[in-house]
Length: 288
Image 1 (cartoon, helix red, strand yellow):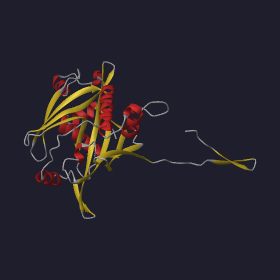
Image 2 (cartoon, one colour):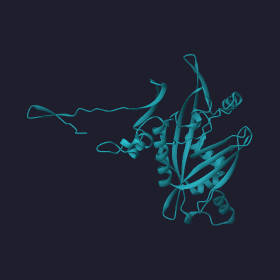
Image 3 (cartoon, helix red, strand yellow):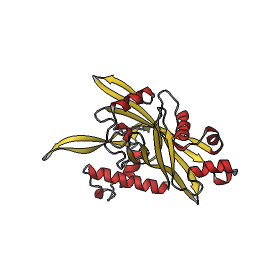
């Protein structure tokens, strides 16, 4: 999972009415397992990419404001939206682009390219994914469907005035900040403040947020990268980009009471390769 470790939403839980509304809109599912209620929700996360002056830029949602409730959420996340249950991630990708940044289907067909080879689905980390903690005390199992979507080169973009207005409405071609408004399926008004930033800048900010997250849980990152030890960047890539391991929060008893620690979990595949040479069996070993 890509690291989104900076504080995302103010810790103000959503209401019971909002949970019921979410269920009615078919964007989450409530099941009872072992006597406990468990909420299931899937999110489509879109890395909307464009080339500008030799650099690759990615669209990030800086702030979200719910007009009806007055909630303001500081996100710093790629474009993402809860998926309707039972819908294909491709349809939900188009729906998110249409609802959140007002790109109609015809414009998407002409100027956007979904990179299906980039698609990945993974279980959301409750510690860093805001939609897993919207309802305090309610266990949430979430999955992220992440995909990259490329905007055509500027030479291929529309030249007529009407279509150019669409381009300018999302801050292009100069990669400016912009704001969109969304009317949700249940008639609520939501404002989204967007920011184009280079992919290098985005990754650097995510690693910094990841470092803060580790430090908050007592991990001494100053020891990383020394000798044969992996660096902070390598751990970030392992956990958030390659999904080769995960970090699990665990409560333990300390001298001053309970404290939270992180446990790194991973699975290893061990292969014993054996060949018979001159009637003697020999095994292949690795020094790693």
